[in-house]
Structures are given as C-alpha cells and as structure tokens.
Image (cartoon, rainbow, N blue to C red; front, side, top):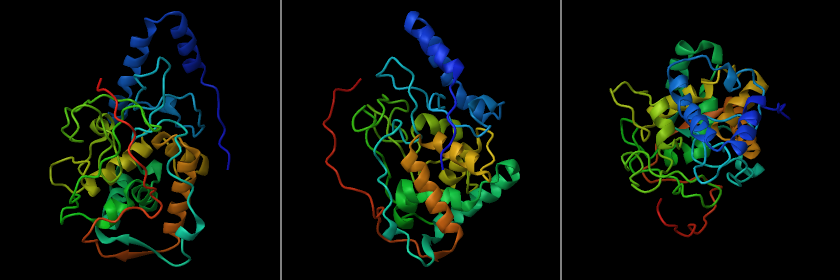
Length: 295
C-alpha cells in the first residue's frame, strides 16, 4: 500500500530560507524542540500530520541531526530515515498457528490499550499494534525477561547514537541517567525510546508513581501515546501507516509493524516470562561501528 506524500511547503521554505540566512537555524531548531512539549501537553497537532498524509519532509518531534546543517527526521530509537534496519521479515517467522507473547508483556500491552481507550478514544489504538512494536524493538523485553513489576532484569540499550551505522549523532542529553552513557545518547528499554523523547512521553503504566523506560508497562503506554499524538485514527489504514512512520520513518519498519500487528490479531498464545534474555530471531549480529571522538 502506498501512502501519499505531500510536499511540505513550510518545511521547504524554511530550508530555502536557512540556506540563505544561516541565522535562521537556531529559530527553526528551537521550534522543533518545543514539539514534544506541545504533544505531551495535548496541544493542537494537525500540522504534524494528523490527516494521515505522510510526508518525508515533515519534521518529527525527535528534532534534527546536529551533525548536518539540514533538518533531519530521527526515529524514536535514533535511526535516520531509510536506515537498513530492521531487516525484511522472512515469511517463516510468522507461523500459521497462534503467536506467543510473554505473560507480563501481553498484560502491559492490553493495559496500555485500556488506558488509551479512555484517554484518547478517537485514536482506536489496540494492544496488537503496541505489541507489534514491542516485538520488533526488543522481542517483548527479551522474551519477558522482566521482574514482577515489569522492569527489565538487565538494561536494553540501543547502539551509541554517534552518527555511525544509519543512526543520528545525538550527544548526551540526560547525563547518562537513563542510558548509562554520559557521552552519547542511546535508545532505552523494551520500546527503545531515546532520552529526549522519553521526557516528552514518560508514562506510568503500572501505577507505581514512577515513569521508567525500562518498565514494560510504562514503555507500552508511552508507545501508544506517541502513536496517537499526531491526532491519528489508527483504525484507518492510511493514518495507521502515518502514525507508524512518525515512530520510525522507514518503509520496511512500517510494513513489518503492520504485518505483526495483524498476525497478533489473528490469534496469540500467552507464554511464560523467560528466565533468560531472548533476542529477536531475525536480529543480525554485526561488529560494532568504530568509535569516534565524543562531542
């Protein structure tokens, strides 16, 4: 299914203006920096793409790549548009029978959908959509390798966002508090939020008074809120894809999310949480990119 891509006149004008007037960039980046706060505060967000029309020129709320002069779209986990991961999903990874989801992860996804059904009923987000992202980002917190409260038993961290390997260059924004890295930011937790995005969508899904990206209840709720934040109705196919593009601006990623969500709706089986971390079956092992000097 192809999604219409419309030219973003405002973004294009801003880029043309910035080329001639370099001093415009602080203003542009400042505007982008307040987008997460607007979203978190429930502001008017039609200009972010709530109509369901996807445009590759639309600035995502994560901001821009400070290593480039032009504005860049950055996914929730720090990947740049069109990054080669995740790999295309082999057909054999979707068996005909029910698909297994660890008990705590399944409870977290359904809890997030219940909360969002009350908070944002017009979004129509369901547990299967959140579960699909949880599966792709971390294999449901490494196969349900979580404690009784739903917090991962070991950190789930993405690569350093140092501008290598298809990822944006994002110098540390949280003093290593969430991602344990005081030099570069890294994506954190079962649904892989970068620290700056987590601050805008931090959620308390299990009602313990804390918002922790390493907790699958909190992360699942934050994921649902992010998908709904552009004013989308994800029950409509075009708006569903528009919402997922905002999560990760990759055709492969969007197609994979839609595939897994539909498969989960067709039947799942609750399985016990794992006592050992289990990675995603199609996660390809690759040598780490060469280190580069810190910012």
